[in-house]
Amino acid sequence: MSNSPDNLKSMDPELAALLEDTYTSDEIPDYSSLFEESDDKPDREKPVEDLTQLEFPEVTVFEQKPDPVFSDANYYSNVLTGEGDIAQQFHSQLQLYLKEQDPQTKGVYRQRVIQSWWNLIIQIAGRFRKSSVEKQWALRYGYLLPTLVSAEQRAMLARIITKNEYNEPIHYLDEWLTLLMDGHVNPLASDEVGQVKRTPGKRIKKELSDAEGKKDSLLSLLNNFLLRRKELETRLETDVQVLLTHNFVPDLEGVEEAYREDQRKAIYTMMQILRELERLNQDIKGNIEKIIDLKQKIRTMNTQVEASDEESEIDIQLIESEMNNIKQLIKLCVGRQGNHFPFLMKSFFVSDMQMLATRENVIRCMKEIEKIDESLFKRTFKRQTLRIVPHTIILPCYGNYGVCWEPFELRNRATSRGRIAIPLFPRDLKIAIIYALADLRWTVAKERAAQYWMTEGLTGEYYQYFTESGGKGDVKIQFQSDYLLWITKEVEGVQKLEREARNLFWRFIPFPQHIKDVLRNRGFVYNELYKKDMNRSISDGY
Image (cartoon, helix red, strand yellow):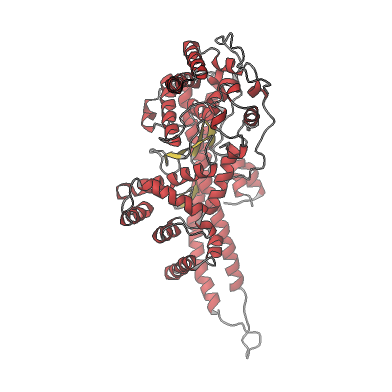
């Protein structure tokens, strides 16, 4: 296929781009008229899917101009406005809890407040897109009553960047629910996908979202094919130069020598390259045809969506089910001994923006971890390796650990994103994220091995080590602890793992070569592992 300027001008731009080289008082404000209707509506953004990115972006801005709504005297009133009896019940329970002095009785009121909050927030979850922005922040941050947090904490929350400035699948809770209600993602309970009732407009949106996702995966594959073609063409050009360089026979003036040994090797290499280029050409041609066909279908569906003036009807059962799954996710993040209080109070979280799981901080931490574990998000599909970052849901809770809900969707193991969750207010942000990614690592390997997970691959090798070393409890939890040490200690040459565990991680979750080159000089243990790598490379013929 020719890449002439004329051809590029007539081609779809996306393909052409690939082919072309404050409060002043601590008093609780007046909450009169709490239950009147509100007409304020927050802006909504359309999500963008992209499987072609090779790494996380470099985040340089971590705060925005403070949003005055966080210090609005009517904030609490606006959260409860229009929520009816459920809001009244919650307000009554909260007053009892805040006024009670007896620890035992306060504990009883605490449980009632927690239950009332969940009743309220589940109701808000189905309405927040047509309501005030205060309801959205209550859902996103668990920010309910300004006087329950300090002035410093209010100012910090007000500076969190609210819009998604990056093309990454990292979502706050309200954003995740918006994606769900618009049909862009499936619910967390994947077995309920077939039960979701969709109007014609919602069905078209779901089909459109699926087509966009398929197009992005094909674009990513095409990009990999083109990068490989460029690499092969460069090698071919080098070999041709070797082939065209001739020496003269010393005793025969003007007579060139026969092909040297390096030239004969170049001929053999070029034959291999040309065969692979022919195969690549078929893949490139097929992918371009599929993408062009998909683009046409997407244009048709976009026209249908625009022509249909239908406002998607929210399936209340779907939202309730999703919020119950979110509730379970929060329990997993918090843990049995953690703080399960569901909204913000000043004694429960620190006034340090860098310790919050804001979208920008999560991207920064994941970028650091991926530099150490380069294959973390890699998945092989049709002989090509894709980088697929999981959907990351930032949950409004005081959790200690991140968790993996599922490594990929059952109906699309090849290119679908998994789902992990990170607590917004963790004890230690980096540890929470590392635990989530360790969970993802383990679950992906286990799903791939299927019924052989105890004998094959990463999980099989680790399970054997775990049992032989007398490990007790949950093998995955032990793996997560070891993965944490691997990412934070062993990478610096600090030996914290058992020898067998270190050998296993070195093989299955290897450090990048430049880190290995440094570690080989950090002690006998790493030098031996480095030598084993070299021996394997020689025995494998590369």
